[in-house]
Figure 1 (cartoon, rainbow, N blue to C red):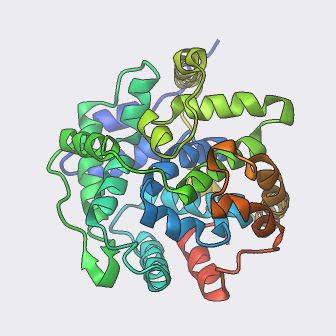
Figure 2 (spheres, rainbow, N blue to C red):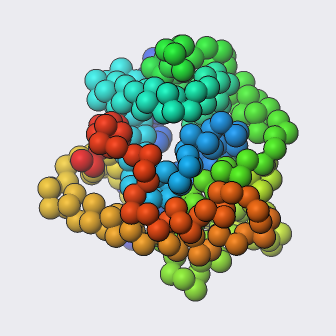
Figure 3 (cartoon, helix red, strand yellow):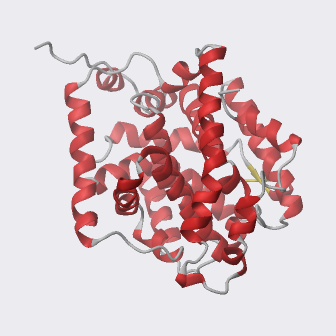
Length: 352
């Protein structure tokens, strides 16, 4: 049996994290990705960013927004945008154009939801969470965290990324933590801050979890998909969002199972020679058309499925947004969207 071809770890070992942090981040984050992993990371990540009333209001809006009406399209656009940033880095023109589109989207929605994009700590948390996600996930799965070299690179990469975003009214993002350890500390403090449960945040998170399960698991295994995503999610986020925790056995076993699967893949498979975003960008027009068709089908079937699952949630009886869920799902597209928004979102991603 041939020994697996490994080059990524060797390359990282040869680099200086203080000088080559963009390349180290690229190597550590841009490979071994596919649609399942991109969707899984999105489902584990985004609910943590909408634990506030103002954050969830700007995402769910009045009728579910894209998390209901274009649920998988939203995953694709977010995932491809992130993959583009990770691979090309904060100094590349493609990243700059993508993030400028994100900033313009925030300006657009800030006019409809004043104040929702003004909280500096929300931006810092998103940046800090992004820098520390894989380290914290590995620890949760019972594996060693990322190396010291990767920690330094992650901290410096996202420091540079923080300079590209701005809050409401063009305010620069300030207060980026001074080390990787401070990034982790900031995340933990943010996550352990007591908060009320916003109804729309509950719907956003459930829509994100349900989309992942709906896309990748057959109906008889939907229960397993939900146990998996909850077992890997932050308990503080589930509590704040009013989502039941995983069964105790699932919470104990499933993170270790995921850790074992990842270990097997890393030990026994060749390192990829092409990144996720490179594969995406070299696709033919027909291949992209096929993916868009599949996503459109998922988007079309999801709203009714979600409404049937969550419209009668006993924990939210009498709450207006759950009560309106069936009517919102029956509309063809969120009335909060327009061509301007669609074009900005396409520019932020990589499929179109």
